[in-house]
Length: 106
Image 1: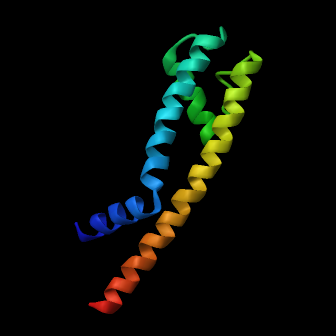
Image 2 (image 1 turned 180 degrees about the vertical axis):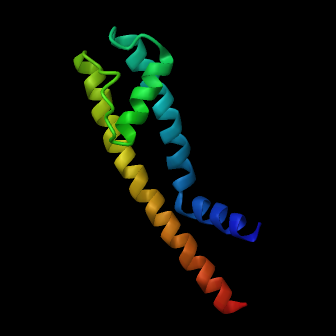
């Protein structure tokens, strides 16, 4: 439980909590926009699956967007995903550094 409190503290101090929650919201919004814009994406679930493939850079290819605006949304999502992954990496390093520092103090 102590580790969870430290992690939450780091997320709040760095502002990463806001970035993570806004990213999750953006993924759902991006999927909705892609679903509404692109006729090749037939369900909202497919749009979410497509967004997952974009974020993970797996690019499965089973769902493909065809409209330019949907492609632009995909590019923005990719950039945002890379940024969030970098921030999460920094938070994890900060978390373990803080754990080690607090162990030394105890």
